Length: 334
Length: 268
Image 1 (cartoon, chains in turn red, yellow):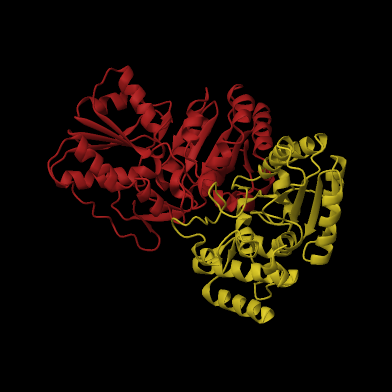
Image 2 (image 1 turned 120 degrees about the vertical axis):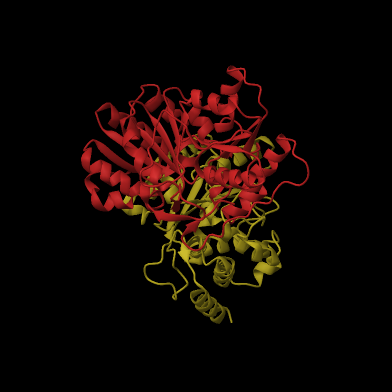
């Protein structure tokens, strides 16, 4: 793993999709009027004959993608996460998920990373997609993983919801990083606390573990890129040996990673104290900057540390997170 | 009508909207200025001659246009002009894309294509509550016509004879990926609405006299009515570069200064 602040790259997904589509002629690229924002301007330039402009009409685009998949195509549908999951939910269920068709729904700008207010913040997309039978739900953390994951995502026989950050994408993992659709990865081993994270919160979890380790709290970090189907075995293993568990997700605490982990722990009868870091059943107003919202709604690294401190009943004030200074073109979590 | 509005000609009012919008976007360096530039005359004419906030309801369907409603609001007594300076900043009530707490309008939102259904609901509520004479004005954008929900609302409004409903359609041929016409063929727009049972008026959306005349005819017609304003996201601001992105205009400090100078000179 690289150290914070992370270097960033632009359009790793867009490049990976073009590369994959050159080898896979059945891949189609659909856009809902957010072409550059979802990195597929590269596809539009390089493979225009397989680029389809659906316009701002998500319901039509999803049902149409289902029919394209019935005829052997592999449609990748792109828009922001909110518009990909909320408006066309009925179409996703009936035109794609129920017939179990290989449509890939790619939703950008997750959770509080949008400056566009509640209408643009995908805070419930994981919950909605998790509830849909046949759907695989993937929330990726960095550029290396995006490139490594895309071929295996393309091979999943049923529908997939892929959740991606917009804009500058951090590079957390080295080039030799191996991605698995079936195994959650323990990135840091620890014995007191397990921090289980996905997507944009992975870097915060790593930073929180570093802060805690420095004061003698042994914290593990588990990366869960595939939220459904959840790798229950790895979660149970990670949770079994520790005194406390924290989940961290850039999403509502209802229905996402935290819920999935809680369900797994409860069904395995693992009575370990659990706290979920995420948006606490509220819409997030007042946004110009993502960092402001992450702080205001308590999705920061310090919030993970404070929660761990309280959960482990440590004495005194929790240690302060020394946030890495991110220069232009670098990324560090709030 | 209010004296504050009478003091301004409608054309001048449109430029006041433009100047305020430039000042609201300038501190951020970019924003939804194109929406204000294209709809300035539509808002100015509506506010100065037709919309009575005490009686009517106003829906701004595309929340990105809330900048224009905010900029127009002080003359209608709906917002203090000082509040405009907070637009788009962290924790401001005036979020850049309209939210549930946006002041100065009855309904707005950032997920496009929902506003006309809301407007139909408000018109239906007026009827059920016996509020005769109350009107509902809905600002809708041409890009939104790509969403099916708009046409569901249009069918409902005509079938239920919601004659108090008037749509101001800002046909600026702009959406995120480029000109609307390059992505989806909407024409003939007026004939589509007419075939759905609406009265339709197709006008130059920067000609305040034409808009005024169309709004008078629209509100007099017993059917729900749409005033289609043909507009440009660069209108009234010659300093903008030729290729400026109408959906999200970049406005660096120097360009903002030139824009303010141009508009102040015209208003002087």
